Image 1: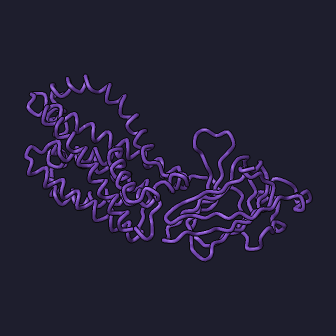
Image 2: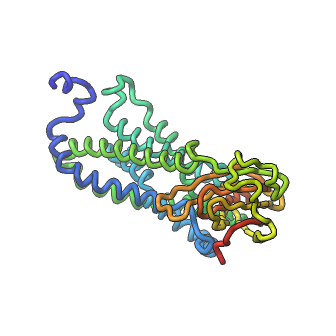
Image 3: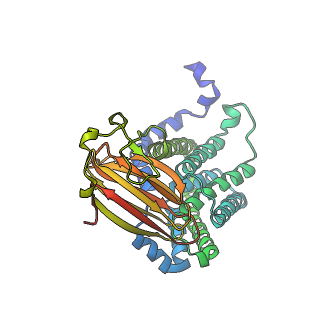
Length: 392
């Protein structure tokens, strides 16, 4: 035991730290899951058309409000800022480091959004979560005590991590409907809102820290806090990677999907290629339903269209735009499932797609489209098969 206490990684934990840790561990571990759950729900990836229209109607003031709300509900950003200011004692240093972080995330927030550059929101949020671990590890002088190397220049690292945080903010902003004619003002309004939210959170943090800094418990409490930041950052990282694996990972099975340029042609398929019925008993297409659906997606907006299909049902489909390529995810969700499971059949970016789907489970099946262009896009979707429309 004595040998362990002489190791660098054990020196950081003394008896007073463990005493406080025992008193705070239970509430921290009870509160943390709720914080992580709320952080995932506070700024959802989806948004109804009514909400999008209300944002457009609210003009730049609405974007300012959304920027402030996102910062105040973005626990990964708040934890990172808290990690920066927690060990700083001089107001000058606090201003210097927060300014560098602000410049960093403003550059990528404004630049990436204006240029339409996007990254996967799960992956960028996972990197942001790791930045929380990094700042706490640096606060504990972990580079020197544990790794035996000099701590990287903190101003440079905070600026670099600020660029990454800005990409995350830009990804969120681009999920909102942006006005083509007021694009720059929308971006700037959102950025100002982010800064106002950050100032409000920072002011509260500094008041709480200043009131506790003179206490003799502050030093051991600061060590416990840094351990908590590492744990929280790690938990947020795992949550984001789970979301990425669930939505975009390679473990999802592929249903029996035959993409064909010959719309409605399933006669060339054999019973060994996934058809749930003998070829001799193929359904009579004369009895199939047929519909033509128009779906208009606003600037930087998204939309879904789904139908209800029984297990073994056949759906012929053909959709196209006037030429604008859209990101799409053709997927299905089993009836009665409450876990959030879905199965992606095809994900790509295209201006048109056609084919035939033979379902492997009963449930809703359809498309998610994302319009990343600066103009509204109308999709003409033709479907034919054994389905029930959700609006019926």
